[in-house]
Image (cartoon, rainbow over all chains, first blue to last red; front, side):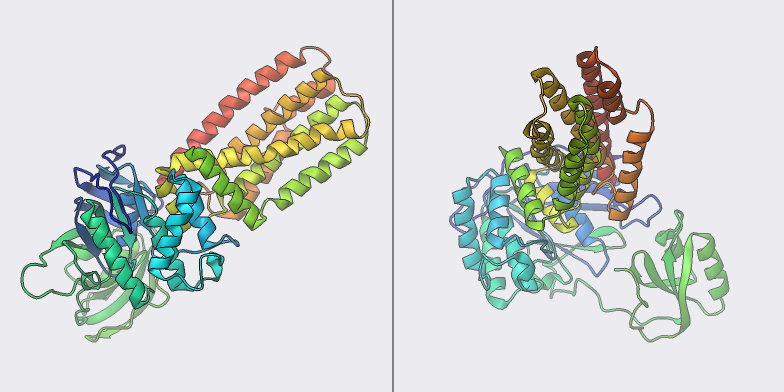
Length: 324
Length: 215
């Protein structure tokens, strides 16, 4: 059963100006979090544990489709885990998605004024804060343009600005550097530094943790679980390892279609090497001479065949039309 | 205060997108046609109240799906929970029906039909009841519970047909029967339908909240 505790703790300040600090005392904790979409879907998160302490910048690294965005949304409170717990989530949380799609002609200034009001700021204060944040992030061509007409990078600045409108205790940013120009990256770095200094628990996702300067703690999400990365031990290792050479055999692309489809079960087969997963699809190599048996077991286990070709030990380009 | 801000944002979003025009116009046209056909005012109020149910349902579905899933996530986190956003969405849809109710009630008076205060009060209550039912059922068949608009439309049309076709279906058919065939006990009958509808709306809202959490 899912158990999400009530928000606790006092909101801390996130500010582009000197902040008043009222930090959250305890780290925000994800414990044994599992998540799947729909009853028969594969597990995107499968027992993920993560601690996001206040006053620190925590980075969650992982490849495409590893479940980073899902875990971030659950920690921010935009969804509930299928199982497991999220504890100590503060009352005030800010969330920055990977991209901000605009709909309708609402301008960036109007959007932030509304969100400021929802955060209980007076409209004038919300407008003033929004103007200051847009200025700092360098929003072009300006705040009175509909969000739909902004470029990807500028729409991302709007998404970032809304997160820094009012004091929060937890700041969750999903690949915030994507699409940002260099001045905006620099400005974001400063804003994150200030937030951390104010005692805010900051969680950022990235493909590679080296994209996030000043990280205090790094975790790697792979196969639905979180593993700590020791950044103090020697030169930084890549958060996302380069793809290993594929073993020889028959490469199979499978899609999970049944409730019983289990990636762990496939992985446990000694004749199978999983080389890529983009749920609900996965690409694996069946050992020479074992392909028929592996395929039969996979089909019986709720998987459907999407493609097959001989593997000669060279990494392939990926899955044909695979899910993201 | 926060609920007011949320409703204000959702209304602004709906107005910006002009998504509410179709249901609002549908209701106004239906009201005009029903009133031009003439006849006693109370049965006419019953008929416009019945029409209001699918219109309120339609508005709820539109407001539920007005935000992209990513924007909806930001709104949920900013507001501090999905329950608050759901409550604001339903309140927003309900409030949008109020000017429509005003038009439906005023139209016979503007056309010169005599309307007693009692009949007017019955009319107000009947419309508030069917709008509430429409919003409550709409919560269950709109995003984030059902994200595909085609399914929402299909279910919405199904519910509207059942409301009109099934004898004694609460509350639309009951209101129509009460206003069309009864001359006494209308107040008590309306009160009973109001209680049933409040329970129905509370149950569907709670169910919608639970189902949305699983999505």
